[in-house]
Amino acid sequence: MWLLVLAYLGGVLTIVSPCILPVLPFVFARTGQPFMKSSLPLLAGMALTFALVASLAAVGGGWVVQLNQYGRWLALVFVALFGLTLLLPQLAERLTRPLVAAGSRLSQAAGADSRPRPGASFLIGVATGLLWAPCAGPILGLVLTGAALQGASIATTLLLLAYAAGAATSLAVALLLGGKVFAAMKRSIGAGEWVRRGLGAAMLAGVAAIALGLDTGILARVSTASTGGIEQALVGRLARSPNESGAMMARDPGGVMKAADQKPGALPIEGNLPALDGAVQWLNSPPLTAQALKGKVVLVDFWTYSCINCLRTLPYVKAWAEKYRDQGLVVIGVHAPEFAFERNVGNVTKAMKDLGINYPVAIDNDYKIWRAFNNEYWPAHYFADAQGRIRYHHFGEGDYAESERVIQQLLREAGAAKVADGLIDASAEGVQLAPDMNEVQSPETYVGYQRSEHFVPETSLVPDKSTNYNPPSQLALNDWSLGGQWTVGSERAISSAPASRIVYRFHARDLHLVLGPATDGKPVRFKVLIDGKAPGDAHGTDVAPDGSGSVTEQRLYQLVRQPGGVTDRTFSIEFLDPGVSAYAFTFG
Image 1 (cartoon, rainbow, N blue to C red):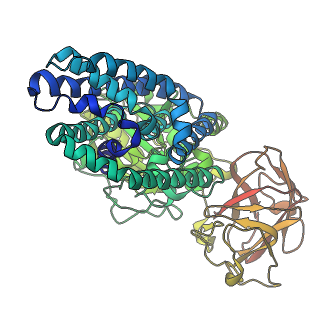
Image 2: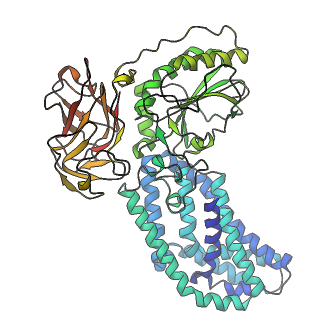
Image 3: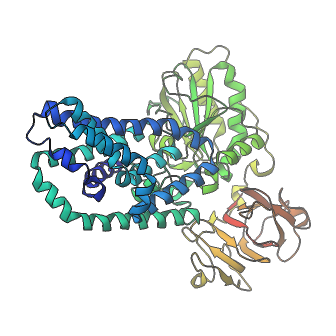
């Protein structure tokens, strides 16, 4: 709603720009003439110009979305260009000179006749839209960039219509007040130019922040940010769209059920299955809608591919999808990213292939489906009956037998024949093996400064600046530290030199760390030690017994799996090459 208001105000303010002056004499020539024959056609012509721009957004937005990560950078280039046009009116004039020339010709042709002819007034309106291009272009460009990154939608058209309505409002006031407004506008042009330049500087600063990764992770931590997106639209960065729930997004702590969960039995009706039309892309399926799913029992699984809790529920979700598919169950994964790299559809596609996910997955980069469900956790499972009503939900790991009995009950209610009574025995290996929660005494720990805890020495953590760190000789349980050269950002720490390391004193069977390679994509070699020695039999699936391994892609890495008794241990990982990104520790 706020973005619509801002678009409307943007349209209102464009009339104070110098580039509108050439057409105003022709506009004011219509003052005092009948509204239906003069003013209304003029405003309609202007609105038509913006309607055509909206059509361009609808057509051009989709192909940029398909470019995924490349489209993001292309859009940032366009946003930077729009910012420069705000700062440098001369640049805007050169870029839009063809439109200005066409608008001037139309204005002169239409303005030659001062009689109240609807056709001439209509041309004046078209010319007004074209002549405003040097001023309106940057603002419209922001909307178009957001459309390109989010995909064209009704929201895009509404933004453009709001902008047109604002511009039409200003023009209507100008027509009513005539020369008084013209004179006042001339006096306000200087202030208007400073406002434009300030907006241009802010846009360029935003582009720089996004390009440097300073903004990454904000939406994944606080759902009050717009994800048209977190890095995907500067519009969303400058005018955040609040989440109605205001809820913090968080992973479930090890599969413990929340108090809000209820045991299946009577299975009360919790509400209707929300629309699933907010995805930026669908994988393994064309887009699915709640209406199209009526008659089917539906399981919606909110997950993200680096979330350890999500990974450990996948064997059960995949087994349910396979076992009950022919009996009327539809499983839909909703991939809502926590970290910036999880927004890359290519990364998600590869993860799905590696994990063997064959059921439909909606890419919810904008968190629209997440907000429609008022969801707060990864993983979260929502079970809907054949009438499109949510009857049960479960947050986190565990209680798989209860969830499967819910599926069976809903299938029987839907009239499915021969619904099996037995329960699956899902086999899980590697990171998907169920945790030993009795031995987990270490919490999920984020490396970025935005959510970091238990870092020692705490006073030495320097945000967003390459700094040399020296870990203490001894750590208390759940304390961690950095060694060597690191740049600590809001959601990750990036090693700036070889031999940089992380140490952590933990108590758990398994230790995982979300990592990413250098920005150029080159693998980063590492060496893991446990209590100063090679891990041997305690090595994780991504580590050799001698502790060696390499970071080749952005994902969760299992670095430790202890085969015997679990005690307090000191973990250390040294990165032999620079450029690695470290995000979060998880345990099992």
